[in-house]
Length: 302
Image 1 (cartoon, rainbow, N blue to C red):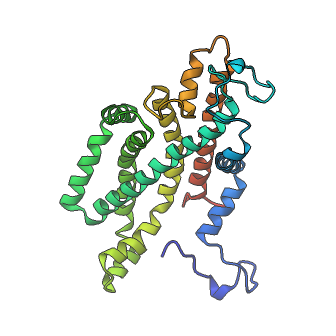
Image 2 (image 1 turned 60 degrees about the horizontal axis):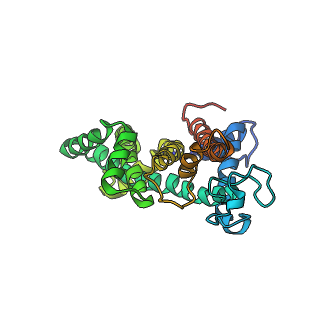
Image 3 (image 1 turned 90 degrees about the vertical axis):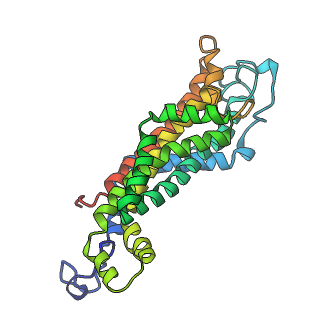
């Protein structure tokens, strides 16, 4: 199978010595990823965001919902309010840390479900073909015909604002691309010799698909998963900015950005700080995705 690299010349390395380690595609991809400084920076930044979100209850200096009129629009560096106060006198740093939880959930949960559903539909369409392929792909084409943000807006508007409905809309807009990507990859893999050999040995369709096809189409899916997470962060915060996300007074980066817009001229830090957080998380996810794309590229040379 293409995912396994067999020993060459009975385990004799290129230098002629025995016992040399065999370089598998996985080890080569990891080596390329470790050499990519931008990908490492992106991965470290994403892990840091996750850690801060998980530790928010213990490291947040204040209650993110506590209103202190005396700290209204307090500048950053104020005592007890390191990043200042918002339009209601709430601690921006505390709301930023708690908002990281919601932003990461909105980024990863919809993309995970979109990946599972899209891969299932795309694999079925690409492997079975015929009328099944035609029916599934035409259904996904209908979703692709709409600009993704307009489709998300329409779904949230129909279901009503809220975090769950927001994630449903982000899931729906992610399914078509994962389905199309999986189908295209399955079509190229199902004709390979090892798949035909598995069929000739009597392997069932489920075994062929689950053991011989899907493991060999996961590389582009993993890459797109990471890139789609960054795109979903922007989509989720954008919908929250429009008032279609978590209802107030939830600590939500998009909602914080919308509230900060109202006082942008007198206290620009109220909007600038959550905006920078959204920017940093999106850039980190895209750097990691770009690094994975280069590392998993089958045509890459070391």
